[in-house]
Amino acid sequence: MFNSGLAAAFIDTVIGSSDSSLGKYATARIGTYKYTIFVLGIGILPMLAYFVLFGNAGIVSLNAVMLSVVASVFLGLGFILYYDALRTEQITHAAALGEVQPVILLLFGVFVLGEVITLLETGGAVIIFAGAFLVITTDRLKVNWKLFPVILANISWSLYWILLTYAISAYGGEGFPVLLARACAFAMILAFALSRNKIGKGIKKPMSAYHKSVLWSFVIIAGIIDGIYNLLFGFIIHVNIVAIAAALLAAGPLITLILGRIFFGDRLSSRQAMGFVLAVVGAALIGL
Image (cartoon, rainbow, N blue to C red; front, side, top):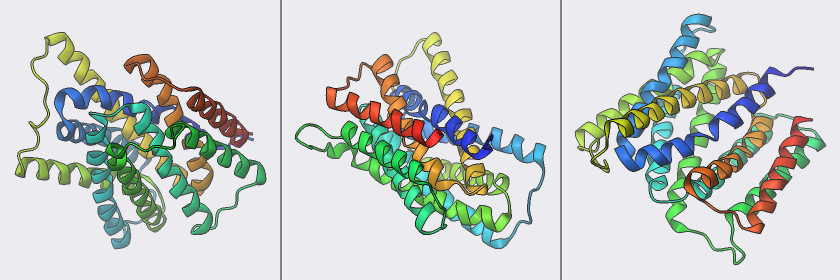
């Protein structure tokens, strides 16, 4: 039987894994704040199109508005923390630490929302997290503390989704809450960057006309992808499969490992390669 929620989760897993690669390339050239502002702004467009095409799915309540606005703070904060760290660190390590977010959402779905997962799905989730552990640790279990902001970013994004869960419930649909939260995050980061003169910080000069066109193409693609990603996860929340979707999304950062190897020369040790295999097996079990 076709499950639209699981299909959305699989799509999110695939498209979400490209964000780090695009962000790594762009933030090193235009800076964290400029990249964040454009990606948040461009990401509004697919959300707005969805909202216009499919109409008003619910009644706009004060609770939905307030929860969406508060959630926007955590969305914007996560962007700044994550991509500022990504400018200097490998995407393989930063993406692997993204496992923090699915773990939090999985626990939230099971223990707070009361979602039920089968034994097979539980086993798949455990295998994914075991694989992720092998990826993010060295043989001596050392941790790169420069990546700590990435952990904070994923905690911030988890809080964003938890708040949106209640906003979507209060509204009765995902279209309005995700759109409002993103618009508020865009306005908040833009106002802060302008007031603190942050927009020009970290910009790499000079660039040829060709490299500029490639760069801004990547930024536009990243914004559209991120907007669709958030919209799809809002739908996942609406159909009440947060726990399973979170476990599937745990495989996403491991796709980023491949992209990091191809485009940035990141390498996998034998331990990390084993972790990658385990994560793929875990995702397959959940898919069954």
